[in-house]
Image (cartoon, rainbow, N blue to C red; front, top):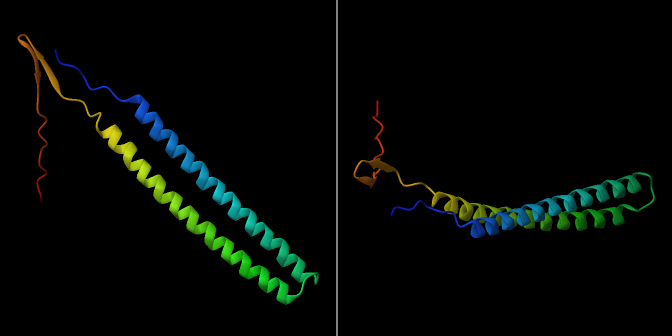
Amino acid sequence: MVETKKMNEAEFAKVVKELSAVAELIRTRQDEKQAVLKDFEKEKQRFKSGKISEKAFNSSVKKINKELSKLDKAIKQNIKTAKRINDRLRKASDRQVPKHLKVTMTGIKSVSSKKKKKRRK
């Protein structure tokens, strides 16, 4: 008897959960970056109002740039991870392409799908 393909739902759900976790991590890093930018705006206002010196502000700018660079690097790494997980998800779904079957009076036949070649103009 011919059987249809069945998706491994547990594997698929596991990969989806991983992708979701990485997406949350990306969002967290983006929120951290936004918080750093808000802190910079506060420091800038303190400098403009004369509450901190130029030397202190310059030191703060260097620290903030270093933090922004670190967060950007982490976000890029998480995006690469998400792409790898997405590729695994795509492969899992690609394995589900159904076999083309044809029912006849004599039984079930597997029909090979022939792709038509596009003609070049």
